[in-house]
Amino acid sequence: MMYDRILIRYGEISTKGRNRNKFIDKLRKSVRKAIEEFPNAVIQADRDRMYVLLNGEDGIQVSDRLKKVFGIQSFSPAIKVEKDIEKMKQAALALVNDLFSEGKTFKITGKRSDKFFELDTNGINHEFGGYLLNRISGLKVDVRNPDINLQIEVREEAAYLSAETIRGAAGLPVGSSGKAMLMLSGGIDSPVAGYLSMKRGVEVEAVHFASPPFTSERAKQKVIDLTQKLAEVSGQMVLHIIPFTEIQQTIHKQVPANYTMTTTRRLMLRITDRIRERNGGLAIITGESLGQVASQTLESMYAINEVTSTPILRPLITMDKTDIMDIAAKIDTLEISNLPYEDCCTVFVPSSPKTKPKLEKVQHFESYFDFEPLIEKAVNDTETIIVKPGMGQQLEEDLF
Image (cartoon, rainbow, N blue to C red; front, side, top):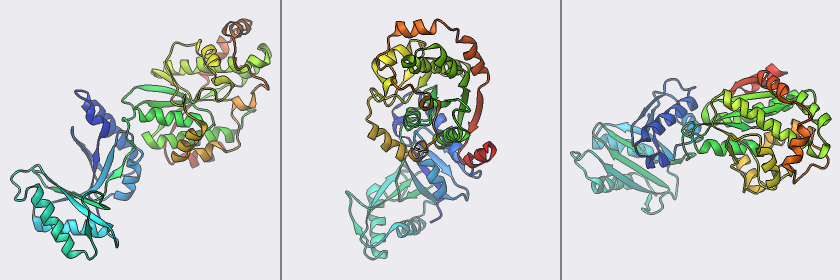
């Protein structure tokens, strides 16, 4: 079936009052980025719905992109038909035939906003229901739980018919809740934290700490691949790669071994805060889950957080590892995260890190060395990459 448009339903955006148009504008931009490889497609939006006019583009491929866009509750490939009953019947028959197989049930959901149309809602249901039953052998009616729900909406300008309702990603459009920096390691948790933050409308820029030669180019590519997966939601994502080798080596010279992890996290947070400030971010996102590792106890978080007053978002804080892994599998980052290329945290992890570090002690150890010049140098030497879906292979060729 050649659809000519896709009807998008807003979901949570519909609950917004006077700010609704701002959310719709953000969603329009997200949809545009998601389908930018389909240049003929045109987006139309008003307060109640959004349409993607396909203009010959592949409706199935466009639908696949829309499934990942936050802010869309559901959408339906649809066709526009003249308000002529016979032409509408032909279109309805083609739609249902395309989806029907033996044993499937259907119902008609009519809606008439053009009060001058010759059939009211009940008339649409009966007229089109009877027509399809007479022409498709084996088709049965089920008004409560049908396999096929043929929706016929008659508006002033035309009639619109659709027979599929595809679930969207829900949430809020990316960027409608401001910008934050995601501390992105090569592990399982942080990409999931970024994904869940984006679902609540946060525009995410990723910050990754690399310590060559202790971490490899393949570890760097792994993080780029994870960023690419997250970029499928918003169309692109900015990735900041921080050179961290000199700072980590200095920490291990200046700080007792069981406190190196705490100081490492504190300096990472200070650097991420500088990147946030430079790029107009309002918060920092981490993949911390309470009690999962030594740096994620309340005592550790208290000691680490002391270096900044910037809000820290922790979407995974109460989640079990199995729950996090389930989401990672769903968003297709789990396999990448499990690749055996270590990041700087795992390479330099102490054998017995403090699980309940004392703030006054870590401050005392750090007071013997001025880390500020190293922090400023790392920030200034940051490599920034704009990552887009589909460009991972090219980046890998460039790296190797």
